[in-house]
Length: 541
Image (cartoon, rainbow, N blue to C red):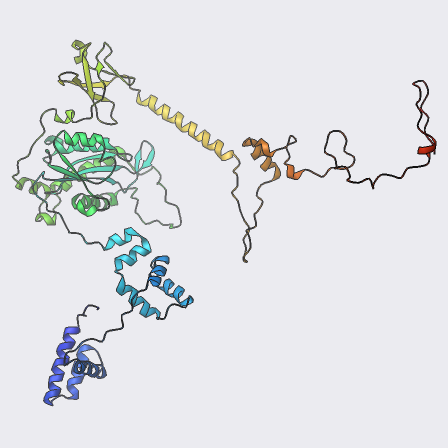
């Protein structure tokens, strides 16, 4: 039964009063006209309402349409046509199994299925999720009770070493006050290394790190492979930080970092040169990176991020915080902050599995030499190494037996930036040479067929010449399809009578009907044997 409409209560009150006037004998035409004008209906409609109430013991009830159930065949056609009600109705009519009009079928479908289901049939699961209901915000809790982390691709092109790229941000947000505890910028798609750098930045306090930080109780992350990596788990686990893995496609479970992602787009990236969502003057043109002139360099972009983070934490007022800034909400919270013990971050770095020995050239690891002056008195000592994933410039050195920290060692035999640039240029030139060679190679055309307007088998179009086909067979070493003369068997001509030697000949006749008739000379003058000195005489008839 359909839900009552908002004006049903008003109609019921009007009809009840008119019936009371009618029972008292005081009902007039003016009363009917007044009620009709109030409801925007005619007096004839008001009289029908009164008649329906009389038939229902004085209680008005809206006339219900006949509810038509959607049959399995109707549902199959609706699914087949991806939620198109008109197409499903047309198909059912053509098959002679649709007794309803389009409007009646439309009412039956919309009554049987919610809008979310029909949207999912038309556009898929993503469209259905637009109808899901979520809470506005989580419980914020107290500072460092919970953090949220996420990656955000910048909506702006940036000049990264002469190439237009869109950097990525890795963000850690304190849920209690929406303060940005830590962040990191990567010129390419981030990995676990970017997450660990952001974690180290988020947990430290003071100086350029700002007042936000400390060790949180838990961090909510999505199911990205980098967030679920072993290196990130070791870094968080070493500090007793619980990693909460959220279910897929549920951004509503980390609303504060999602709100921050939107703030970066609307309040920072939109005003930068190279913004990716600017209206395209030529909608038919394929999107491509803009020219490097006028784009921000990676250093300038990172400086803008640092400035925005400071303003967001210290100046931006948030309505859900009582119109306070994140810094004001942080200071108003008196929850104890657990700061990092000395060296705790270095000990949370991933550990290299094998041990090393300090020699007079330092520590040799994968062809890299790490050397520092403090190694002078430790030659021959067995040590272990910890390092940031993807960062090989420095390593943290610990005693292999006691795990005592010795210090940081630097990579000494790293190539100079000029040499690295030359290697990149050589690689680019090699790639360009290969691309040019591949473009010169004849492309093997795919099967193409002639257009038709009648039901008929497809007619192939010959797009290869005989020589092209032979050359392709030679290139693919398909020698079985070639004769010794380089011609396919199906193109050989028929043999003629003038062929001699070992070539192909016609098969011999099956009967002797083609032999010439014998002459009389064959019987009267048998062939004689001539001596070698006597010239052979010609037989005459």
